[in-house]
Image 1 (cartoon, rainbow, N blue to C red):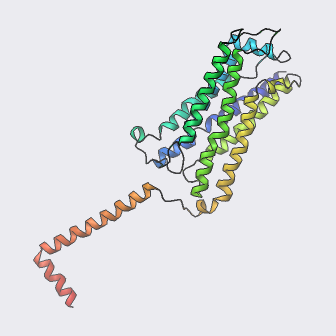
Image 2 (image 1 turned 90 degrees about the horizontal axis):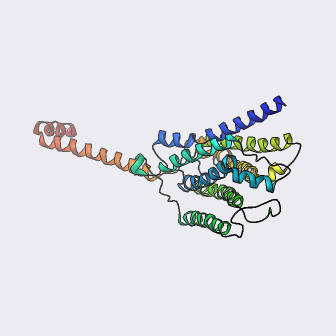
Image 3 (image 1 turned 60 degrees about the horizontal axis):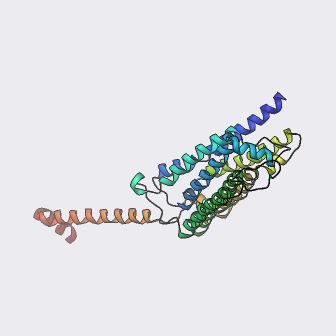
Length: 309
């Protein structure tokens, strides 16, 4: 029993560290380049919203007596939620780091060269729809005849745990959507420059370990798979992460590898400004040199003699 608990703990910790580490390569790359070009602000924006909802889900599943009681009523064969303390720690860390990364798209805060891409009206509309959906579920639960309470006799009635499940499914939907703008950006630029592949490698490892952890928890519970059906968000998130990360890996190491290996990248507005600045500086130096030569008669005589010779 001790050995199985040790294996469970090791998988939980390794998954948490892998997914937590995946938040660092991108902001560190932005700081090193002092630029967010090659990326889209839609990803960290919608990612922050998703992790706020997932934080609320894991926090309530782990700490709320009401939600844990309603979970036990809905899942009598496996009354213990598969949300662990490492899930709470991870989501807290995720909210902080995704917010930090999103803030880097503010030139006023960081002074970075900014990508020309906005968040986009469709992403804003999607985020608004997500928030309205949560408010709608809240209204339905609070106005239900039982006011969000359930018993063993009516486990299927509207309850506050449905709001918590709604937040978890919201995170799943956001996870599906959040990767799409960056995948499309890489496609249009035919490059992954500016997009950290290290975060993807850590992310896919975290996804594999997350699926393994929830399956192991169910196996240790006597092969009762209600641990998976009772925590569908965690199981879905791990699998969705693996699929989308596979697309990024294919873009980086196969589709656009020639651009990367040749050291090429699409020209950005920052490159154009730098080139214009260098050319302007060169012209200014030439003009200054000509003015000095014209103002010095002896120098003009030397130049004329050299040209005649």
